[in-house]
Amino acid sequence: MKWKTSLQQWMQIIRAQYLVLCVVLSIIGNGVAWFENSFQWSTAVLSFLGLLFAHISVNVLNDYFDHRSGIDQKTIRSPFNGGSGSIQSSIVSPKTTLWVGLVFLTLAAIVGFYFVYTMPTGWQLIPLILVAGAIVLLYSPVLLKIVGGEWSAGIGLGALPVMGTYFVQTGQYSLVIVLASIPSLLLVHNLLFINEFPDVEADQEGTRRTFPIVFGIARSISFYKMTLILLYIYIVENVVLGFFPPYCLLALLTIPMATKTKTLLSLPTNSFQPMMQLNVGIVLLTQLLFGIGFVVSGFIW
Image (cartoon, rainbow, N blue to C red; front, side):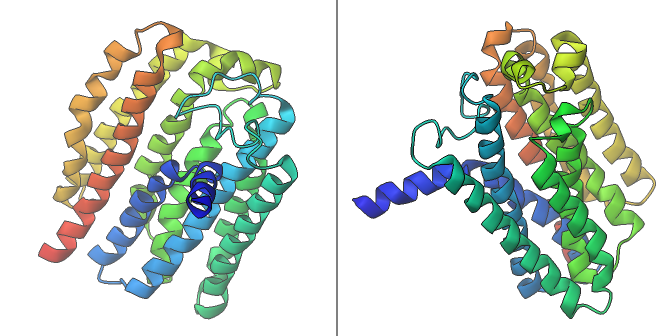
């Protein structure tokens, strides 16, 4: 049926399979608010929509800029890297892709500024919205051409959504939410970091300065392993110090998954797909369990 085909194409254009990340980020921010008895369902739903619109914008604009630079024409596409392929498959034109990305970015901004307008302390949300919007627009064409630019993804698609989701529930920022956003910063960084490994040659031709290009695959692998180790230590440390409730230790259940990365990262560079798949599982499940820790604690405490 035509409508079904069209729906499938739109799911490809917006890379719907990646939007699960919005769910786990929302659970963390709202989970901390729930734990602090400052939660409303209507606010949670609206903030989730804003986050969803922003993430769709990132995905679509990334396709546009990577097509324009020629990178997506040179990458070996997989479910985890190389873009959606919607432009290369002539499903949608580059111009339409750009407009779709900008429309969803505008929708995200409308949601954000709705909270700015309706909340007594809403003006404090403006810097977060502006930084997040700048990262969405500049990530592919500018930030990845700067050494360390990958961290902007961890900030814009990890830490800031967690902090923003919490803010619209509580009307304030807190030390706890800043600390609770760090795991998402690290994990979302790692989500895109590993996906850069098979794209090194194409990214070089696109004049990017990603970590694997600048420092090599071997050092990048060591860096990835170090971030995972530090992540688990960080969660335990903050539970011990009393910033996170004990149920946040549920996030440690992904340690067995993390130990498998040692074997998969030793495979040849043309065999990174199993590692990328495992990495997605680590990123999503660790954040989900971490957020559930706050939610469960809110019921009990």
